[in-house]
Length: 460
Image (cartoon, rainbow, N blue to C red; front, side):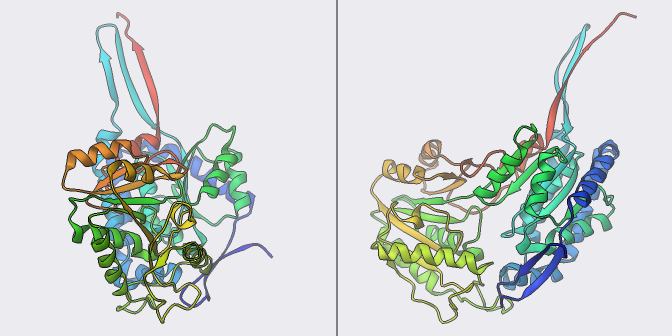
């Protein structure tokens, strides 16, 4: 009997969905169909490709009433938050709006003797491996610009959100995108690695764990196929003495706890100037005590279960280790905490960078808060991490934030906000967060290759 992938619902531990994986031969045939379809897709007018992609986006929007409860069952996000279509549509729409200028030829010069320019050429077949935490928005970051730029796409989604890729491909195909131009696949890790090593794809975009990104790069080694990665994070917030305290607490704690803390750019550690520290901690604890942990299908629930029991187990372990080493946990265990996927959100003080909760990615509803006395101390602590995705700075002084931002080792610097992807900006990271960049004009450049034209004119 062939291997199957099973989505285990965090609501009750039942099997919510199951799909058989493709054999290597079946998977290679999928990639071959994508390659065969690519040139004719790229030959279509740009506006036609844009219109078809946006029709696919609209088709997903029309399914939102079905998608929201489906997501609750697959990964535990409460239905009260209404799904992801707002961000999904915003990102695709922005990439569509900048496509013509982003993909335009770069004119280098023309005179009586020469015409010189650089074109943006689609890679060919783009392989997208998407994560479960924001399964629609993370996938569209690459799917929309890849298709618009003239690539064909093969999408492999996380097992925890098994139905997302299937639903996306079906919606785009129903909207008129040819079936071989956008395909969803169910693959084992071994078949995935074999396909990449065999150059079945021309570009790989992976969002997930550091270990997963390393596996992708190892599979691609020696093929010269580009691999873009967005991996782990341990994003800091820094609250300066002139910050708006109420806004800082509201935004940073929401950034730490929303989606049960399962956000790529979620806030995982907070440094507060000593003059505001006590007030910040008090307001943060009050905020979290007001959360309602519970069944995600209940409209009163503000925090659902984590997506998988093993994810919750890791967060519990980090909290327990920190408390054993002297940290203080401020939130009493909630009645709905079942010791499994349903996990009490937690605020920790008395933490240090010797504790895993301040070093390792938690990816759950816990945040450590430390007191600092200067910008220099905060910068040193923010940079004391193997990760570098975002940092959130809280001050009324824009120039000060910019100066500090220049010293922070991250892909994005926020001032007075957090946990948001602006599609006009490049979404990128450094260190063990990975390399490459999505969205913005740079996202288009990463999904195409430059091709130079040096044309000498002859008399005649």
